[in-house]
Length: 194
Image (cartoon, rainbow, N blue to C red; front, top):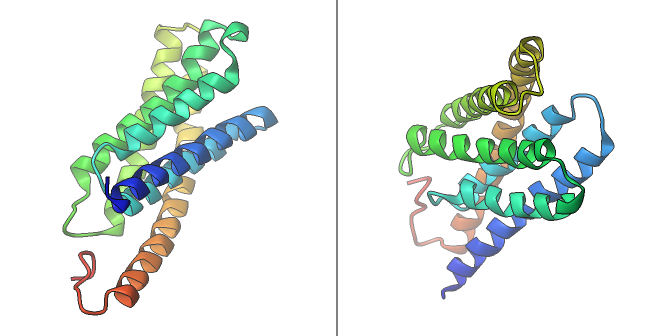
C-alpha cells in the first residue's frame, strides 16, 4: 500500500470520527435546533472530505463508519426501533444524497464553488424530505405539520447555514492544499490550478 493510499484511509477515518463525535456530543445536549447544527457539521465535513480525498464513494464510506460509531454509542439493548432507525437512517440519507449530487454536479477537472453550494442545498432538502416521509409513513411518529416545519423551516436554515460554512471550509482547505502543492512541488503543475 502506498503512503497516499494509507493517508486517504486515515483521513476518511478522521472525518468519520469527527461526524461520530459530533453526533454523540450534540445529540447529548438536547438543544433546540440541534439537528440544524449537527447536519451543518456533517455536510461541512463531507464537503471538506470531497476536496481532500476526491474519490467517488468517500462520502458513503465516511457516513458508514460514522453510523457504526453511532450505533455502538447508542447501545443496542436500550434502543427502541424508532431511535435505532431514526438517527442512522438520517445520517445515511445525508451521505447518500451528498454522494449522488456531488458525483452528478461536480467535476474532477473543473472546480466551481457554486457546484458545491448546489450540492449542499439539494442534499439537505432531499435528505430532510425522505427522512420526514419515513417518519410519517413508515415509523408513524410525525404528523404533516411537523413534516412541513422540518422540511421548510429546519431544512431551509440547514441549507443556508451548511452552504455558507461549506463554502468557507472549502475555500480554506483548497487554498491551503493549492499553496502546499506549489511550495512542495515547484516544477510540477497543480491539477487544480492548471
